Amino acid sequence: MKCFLATIWVMAVMILFSSCKKDPASSRSLIGTWELRQAQTGMIPNIDYPRGNGNMLIFSESSYDKYTNSSLVKSGTYTLVRDDSVEASVGLVVTRGQFKNRIIFDNDLVSPKTFIEVSNDKLTVLSGYFPLDGGSYLIYEKIEDKH
Image (cartoon, rainbow, N blue to C red; front, side, top):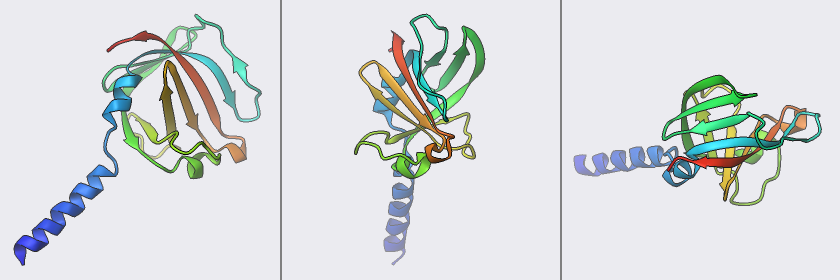
């Protein structure tokens, strides 16, 4: 009986940890320097950014740097986790299979969720709640690989 209960307990712990595990494939594709190409926030129309605009995200294995107009504005750590709640979190309908990764900056589990999608050399970031004009849709282009 003790062995049976121990087995159930171990399986429950494994299920719990697997639901929030880091997605290593996405983490590897995120590493590098990304420059902002397009932003849409709240009620503001899309803004297109030219190459060399200085609005960048730089990711290493577990840390990031954020630059605005070529000035470092924030540094810290990040974690990627699988999260299937994008539609409920941002209030948009997304294509099935997209935005399954949530990025957590600086272990901040209180702020609204931020979801990412990496495809080819494009990083798309969704955050906020769009129906209340608080959503943010950012598209970055990879300008340097750090693999």
